Structures are given as structure tokens and as C-alpha cells.
Length: 439
Image 1 (cartoon, rainbow, N blue to C red):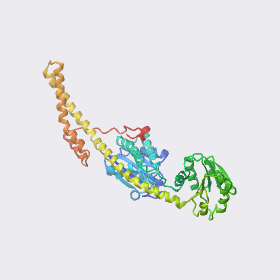
Image 2 (spheres, helix red, strand yellow):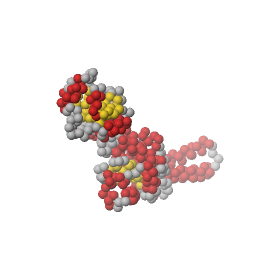
Image 3 (cartoon, rainbow, N blue to C red):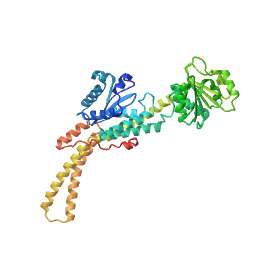
Image 4 (cartoon, rainbow, N blue to C red):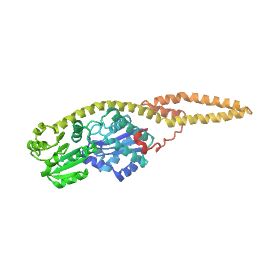
């Protein structure tokens, strides 16, 4: 049994190619069933996100399996095979397992250590389970991959430090103010960056959101997302006096918040700290405002410095994560190495059992009337002989299974003993409900 992956991601293909190869909803289920029906494919899982589409498949013939998946992607995209090869990457067995573990741990993501991919891998596996396209090896592989993803995050903390400007603002706010529960924020501007920052702040406990924008309707729309309040731009400073945090990100070409305005605000402010975060380029807030008593001002460069520091920490955590992946990879490969010999071992034991039963029956008939005790002695002797005869070949086969020649030794043993080996059960062990728990 070989495990392969063929995929595209943000590094190998532009978005206009990736979107042609994306799967979702009904198209995902139909795709799983169609691909699984290909003669060379014995199981498949399709992972499709905005940044990647990857098809993991079980096959007995590597070249045939890779061709089947590439043909499938070519039909999906309307491209020819040569074009598909230009944009896709492919891994087999050992490298496939390592790749999936790295993907699930967030080490192959555009944003190093991001957490969303863990849920996306779980969803992909659950979809394959629902449509009956997994087999025993894929089940164990994806369950362990989810466990690996959680372990890397738990042991390295790779996802704990902000690596986006919007979340870095939240991190600085926590450092400066402390617990954000019940705090209020005034958001100046209603663009995407303002929305993201406000969303992160609310997720971390901020409860009062006030939005001000030159377009009042856009302020209303953004405030509604957080059960907040919109205020007209000309009343901006009336509400600044009661805010704990000010976030500003407009498209203005001049200062929106001037020193004189802030001096007046702080003069009438009852006390306490005011944190101001200027994400705009050009800047919205006069840098001199940071010199006012009680005001702490961060601009986008300060936020980027936090991001750079945190990214460096994530990269260091990734080194530890890679070591964890190699450890888990070795464990999985040891398990996998023994799995493809399991049917052969079962057939060999059955072969020995049939010979034992036939010869035991013949011997007992020839012995005639003997006591139950003697019958048990003879049966025990027969069991012992068969077990000892089979012990060495079975032990050696398990050991050879962990080597590149494992398949060859398995076939030799099958031929030597003229064994009829049944295929493995294709749809066993699929447990989507507990997928995240690992095996």
C-alpha cells in the first residue's frame, strides 16, 4: 500500500489556477466518489482551502496512482496534463506523510503556525469518511496527523504570538492595559484593517465599540457587526475622552487627529491611560500626540516590530515542530511497515492452522481411544510445533517490513508457501466524530 499526494498551493500556482482546482460542498463529495472509483485508487481524501488543493490517495502502483490523480485534476481544471504538472507537486509514501504532518501543524502555511488549517484538515478527513473513500491506512494517517498538529502547537506554542498587524495591535493593548474585558475602543475608519483589529479586540474581551468614519453609513455597517455605536466624524473627539483604546486607519492624506485636538481631549479627560494605535499609511495621528501625559501611541512600524519579533519566535518554534514531526513520522512508518504484511502473516498462520488441524485429526484417529489428558498433550504439541516453525518467518517478515525491500520479501513468502492473501478491508476504522483525538 502506497500513500501519495498531488497538490497545488500558494507557492506553486497563482490564484487563477488554484480556483479552478478548488472543491467545496457537493462538488467535494462528487469528486471524492469519482476519484475513488478509479482502478488505481484504493482510497482518497481531498483537502481544499483558499491557499491549497491537495489530493491524498492510497494506491498499490505509484505511477498509476499519480497518473490517475493528475488526470482527475486535469479534467477538473480543463487543463492538459503538462500544464497540471507545471503547477502541481507530488510526494510519495514517506514524503507524503511528512508533508501532511507539516501541513496540519501549520508549518507549510502562508502564515507560519496558523491554526485554521487544523480544522480544515479535520473537515477534509470527515468528508472522506462520510463518503466512504478512506481505507485503514488513510484513517490512521489522518487521525495521527490531527494529533501531530495539536501536539506541535501545544509543545511549541507556535500559534501564540501575533504575526499580523491587526492582531499585534491587540497584543500591545493587552501589554499596556492588561485585561481587556469591559474596555471600550474607538475605531476611526471603517476599512478592512479597522474591521479586523476591532474583531480581534472584541474577541479578547473589549465590549464597547464606537466607530467613526467620514461615510456615516459605513460606520453604521461596521458598528453593527459588533453591537456597537456609530458616531459622525465631526463628533469624533467628543467620544475619544471616554475611550480606553483608539484605533485609526483611514485613507486620509493628512493627520486626522492633530496635537491640538488631543491636548484638548486629554485636558478634559477624567484620568486613566489612553492607548492610540495608528495603522494608517500615511499616518492618521500626529506623532506629537504620543508626548501628551497619559497617551501611549503606536504606529504601524511599532506594530511591525512586534510582528517581526513574533515571527522570529514562530520560526524558532518551527524548528522544534519539525523535530516532533520526524519523531511522529518514524512511529507512523513503523506501524505502516507492519500493516502491509498483516494479510500475509494472517494467511501464513491460517496455512499453518489448516495443516495442524488436518494432521492432528489424522493422528488422533490413529491413536484410537486415549484419555482427554493425552488428547490435550497431543494438541498442545501440535500447537507448539506450528507456532515455533512460523515464529521466525513471521518475525523476520515484520522486521523486513520496515525496509525498502519489505514488499519484495512479502511477495517471496507468499510464493514460497503458495499463500492466497486477501486484500485489506477498505473502509474500516473511520471515526470522524473523534478525528481530532488521533488514533
